[in-house]
Length: 210
Image 1: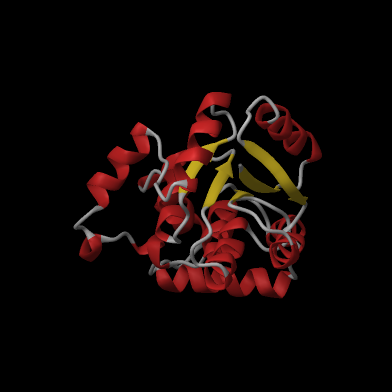
Image 2: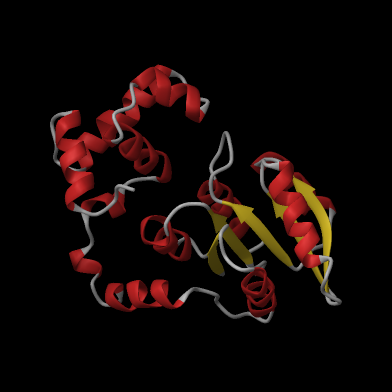
């Protein structure tokens, strides 16, 4: 029996996952969590074989929680779930030692197959992501500058490129405006840019926009 913990802040989505997995005979939901802190607490008390982790939870984001999990439980498979296009976030997740990456629009059978594969120690990625990773291998010296951004910096960059104001970004990310301004400054420095308009252009030129 494969014991799974689901971490997602949307109750409806968790219920949907439970409905899908209830139709299998070898996967069981061991526990649920609404945020990263609750997930880490569950992992300290509940035994599980696979974690399903939403990449975009409130507060500390999924990729930050992933790093904590891999520090505390290095052999525990973590399957990242996201509503974002794979090209933007999937490679960052795999590089952070996720065992796999699925969009929330994936078919039910794909989720089940992914859980079983990562439980056996494998990696689960779509064919399109496999092509992205293949093209990335051997190009470490050619990494784009945005690969050097932290997860928070990367997210702030995308929100600024979408035309959002510092205060709105702070509210969405549950951060202070001073903190967001600091992230903005780091983004400008690491990307060798000067203005928000430069950020917009950079995001568009690198295919990072929706």
